[in-house]
Length: 251
Image (cartoon, rainbow, N blue to C red; front, side, top):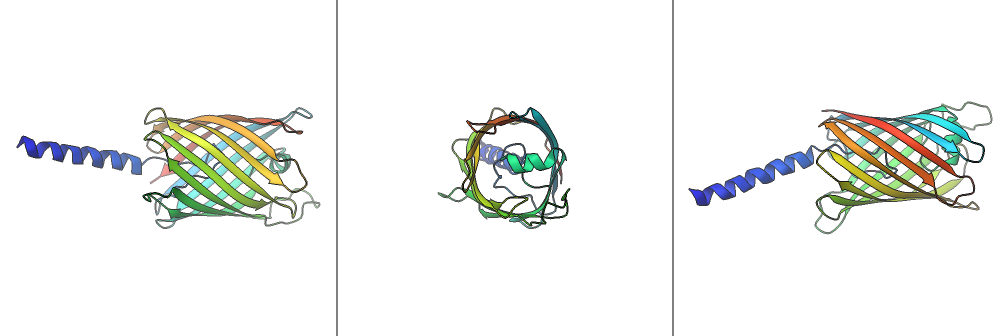
């Protein structure tokens, strides 16, 4: 009897751990890297944040609210909607690397998942909806963006994330490249920290390099709080930011 009990107990334990991992919340907020995971079919997730960005050239502060709505369409496809608005919104979008668009539709596709030797890979596309201009000078650009997201599981608790992409500016016809590299570490089952470098590259402009770090805490299986802060690195028009957020998943 004892010879049978041990394998059964190990199988039950393994199944329990696997179920917990499959039910873990995965968020795109507050770091700048796109997460490789997609929502399960029929699941809805709301990622709400608020950030303060200080522009050190004139001490102006942008106060911007962020909303990311994610819906699982199929096992590999997720539909998304991004909203950013608030005080000095347009300056925030034009002068920082952490912005997306005032209003954008997005699709995420899980390309590779749990491969033996390849990292997890997802492809993310954005299309700005040009209905939010606040002046006649702002032309109605659709401003598409495309990002490839990768994730390596280095240990049971440590993960490496990195993104590469290209996007059109929100209020001009110029295109630029973007990149992110970050480490995520699970301190406990509920507490996670991250540190990240992210940058954008424009032709005929100085590259904008940035660093941020933050903490995420799961209050429940479907409710998460987060806090993050970051800054440009040796940039002619520096800015610093602080953000807080909450994420809620409807299963």
